[in-house]
Length: 291
Image 1 (cartoon, rainbow, N blue to C red):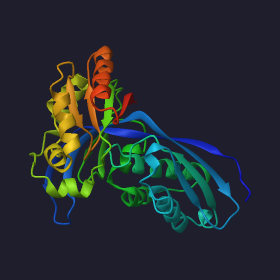
Image 2: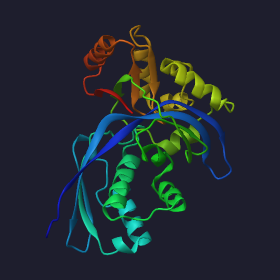
Image 3: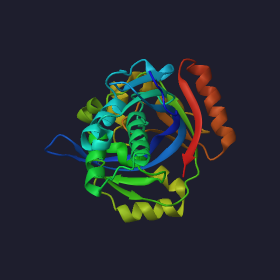
C-alpha cells in the first residue's frame, strides 16, 4: 500500500442552545427552530490518498465502539462524491478518526465528520460545487450538516435545511455531561408531545444579539420525551436542576448529552466536580463556543 501525504483535519461538535418543535410534517419530518453554535470538542481526522481499490475508515477511541467502520457518515459521503465528481471516481483514501465526540449524544459528530471530509475533498481536488450541489450534499449527509459549512453560529429553521448565519462572537463556557446511554433521534421525535408556536425569529435574533444570556428564555421541546426514554438522563437533569450554582441546564438536540452554563467559570468547575463525584462513570468536558 502506497500512502501520499497525511492531512490532519479537525471536526468540531455543536450545541443546540434551544430547540422548538413547530409541527410534524406529512413526510414524517418535523419543522423546527433552533439556535446552534460549534464548540471545541473535536474529532481528529487523518486522511491520505492510497493506491488501492478501496477506501477504508477506522474509528479509534472511547466513543468508537458503536460506529461501523464499513458504513458510517464518512464512507457514505466519500462514495457519494465519487459518483458525483469524475475527478474522484478512481480516488481512494485511508481515514483514521480519533473519536472524542460521543455518538448518539446530540452533538452532531457524524454530520460534522462528513462535512469536514467534504470540505477537504472540495478544496483538495478543486471540486466545482454549485448551490444545488451543496443543497443535495447537505441533504445526503443530514439535516444538521449545514451547521458545519462555516464556523459561525446559526439559527436553524424548517427541517434543519434553512439557516440564518449570525456573524457575532458567542463566548460561553459550558460543561457537557454524557450519561453513557445514547438517544435515538427518530424515537425521541416520534414520542414527542410538546410543540411550540412559530416564534418571531427577528425578535429572537434581537434578544440574543443584545445579550447572549437571553438564550435562557428558550427551552428544548424534546426534553420531556428524552427524559421519558432515558431514565439516566432524566435523573441527571433533575440532579443538575437542584444545583443553585447552575444558571442553565439543558439538553442538546435530541440528546442525550446535557449541558450546564454558569456565568462564573469557578461555578462551572464546581459543578463538574459535583457530577464526577455522583456519577463517576459519566463523561464530562468543560468546553467553549467556537466563533
